[in-house]
Length: 280
Image 1: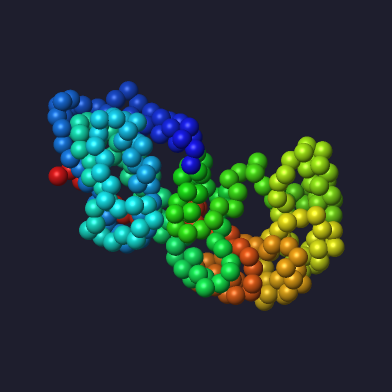
Image 2: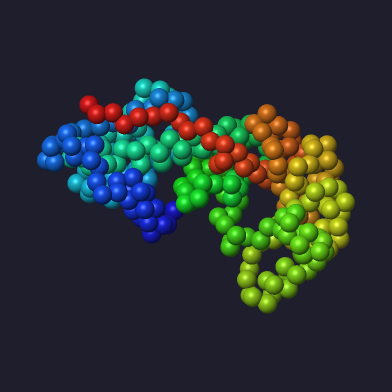
């Protein structure tokens, strides 16, 4: 997680929340008063975002004393205390909502990812996220996926080429899309992995015949067709199952022998983990 990206995110988020002042706190709290608060866990799951919270507190007031008790990636249960904070009450109150928004969301993502990875931990397939993320929070959400035991597919459009259905259709077919992509990489001197989407078994066979890619995405394939496609590909390319895969179906796809399973729901259908920052 790049420090400059995190610093920019924290600065922008604090400005969004505080504006010209935290008038609720300024109205009733002495500016010199000091206090303590603790992060109380109210749900069962995986903790994520504690390290980010420390940076938020530092950005708000570097005199705040942050004492973590539980590390990111740890299984947590209701009643546990993740960290303790002490310092100016005004600073604690300024930080509260941003820290909770970050940690509840990241912990929810990490918890969901862990559930998926646990279902297939004895198989070779790895769980991937997607670009279906909250604008401006992608780097945090993808970090949460890693904390939960998953892998990042790609950060954006710039670090991997993925030729999906619209690319293929706009390019005039599978063969054109692949050939133009190889020419583009050669012309620009870029070294990027190339993945292409297949919508059916015929697409798989055309991709194999054309070559020039690293991974084939089996998009919205039923389990039976996935098994057939993996057999046809026979290890010549990496394979990825994608499209509507749930916690209930993920193991069946993994048992087909795919290398990766991408799950958009990890980051776009979030159930945040319940926690609260309580004064004491």
